[in-house]
Length: 117
Image (tube, rainbow, N blue to C red; front, side):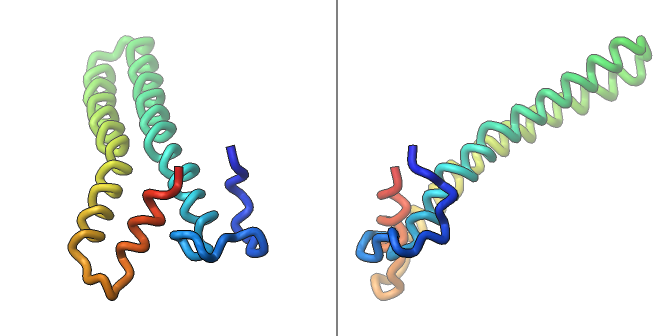
């Protein structure tokens, strides 16, 4: 795996690539930020909801259990929505790339985004 933290490494940047020197930043977003958003945040939400429900069950308070159950369901829905954020962003980028003029160089951005593996 390549080093994602070499953003300021301009000397090794390939300016002639599809990304025009922005490849380290695009790689950081695609390989660093998106996996965190897609995997870690939903897991944290579900774990916190489970801990809250466990506390309510241990306290044996019926009202607290109902409240914790509804909060766990909301957090699971939020986790599922956050999980699909990267898919929605990629879909929107594809729509923008096909609908824009060729003069705006949006196709270059789409090829840059798709070339990062």
